[in-house]
Length: 548
Image 1: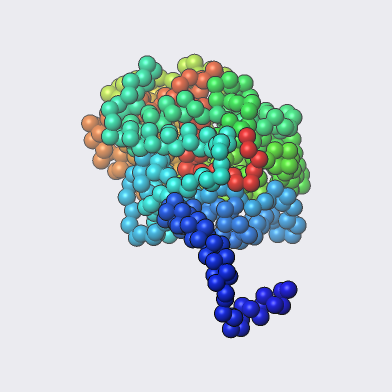
Image 2: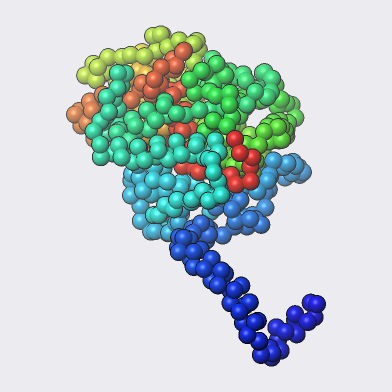
């Protein structure tokens, strides 16, 4: 029968009879009518037309792979020479989409919240909506998102999934933030952001309110103290432990329903790993790396959420210097996940678009009594002050040029006998904050607490909350090469300019204050807000995942 059909198709057909013509017409007319109906009802900009505009996929299914992921095979970028690369079980295809087109430009502009410019790093699209990315220029080239594409839901869906509803809420927040720039300033019983300390005060305020209204965090319950659900609360790593503790007891932002969560928190402490897992005798970083790998593989196998986004809606918080190194344990933890780090060093792969810079705060107790305050600008008699240990490449240069050299620039390796560190800060107009071995320094927050204008001297450092705060409006940024000219730079600032900066310091320091329990706009909420901003820059999508 099949052979006969083949011959009929490719040979000269016989002349049909009248009855055959009638049968053929009876069969063909319904087909023609059906085709016309489909042609009229189907939109020209179909789902496939939109998907075809996205960057090409490297997986078998274009609907499953995000443009927000490198095309190369996963590799263990944290391995050291001579070590075998650890296995990576939590490595399924990406399921989140970047819904934008990009074009390359050779210019830059300094904007903040509500910008229309978004950035890509290492070939990865990270920002997908007109919201909140801090401009980043890499290798002289800007990667600019100039068009947003809305991917429609499949027409076969009758009911939206819970993830669809989560994404719809985020889209409403994006629209509200965008509209806030040209709207009137919203009222607030506690604090209304205003002034040049912010990239866009109105957009920041609206974003903060949207976070309070809907942001939900799912904290993984797996893991036991001291490495998990625990951390130091009284040291220079205190923000790591205090954030872990607060998220475990928080009732406002934490949700027990992962289907309602916007982000997923990985509650491990790098500082505690260094203490309990790392062996100083062997100097082997492998145990820390394996701990991170095992933990993420555990939650990836038990829950579908890491695999759903390949970690793009997951975040970690680490204030230990080795936080970045721990994140290199799994490629997608470093590449995709939100890393909230004190050691925010761009030369060590910190990405200010995706990652969060958090302040290093040296807490000795759970209260800041007596640590915040200081005289007015006119009553500060010392031009600039620094006292601290000599480590790292910058401080020796500072000491070489200024230790004991000038009465106005008081630079000390050791605090003079009888001197009080905080009193010296309170009597100083400018507090010098040079990096040590790592870029972060608790002196930055100490300067803000004491009403002293910070002088930042570092390389490749991204100051905390730079997505919201304009640091150059309330601090002085000095390059290492300019250290010999430090006094000249500071004395060139007029009294009026200094008074303005000092007033801004007093206003902005509320964002760095540690409170127990937390208060609105304080450091805990600012860390959460920075994570919220990064989540706004990613759209998670699931086609084959089970519906909630």
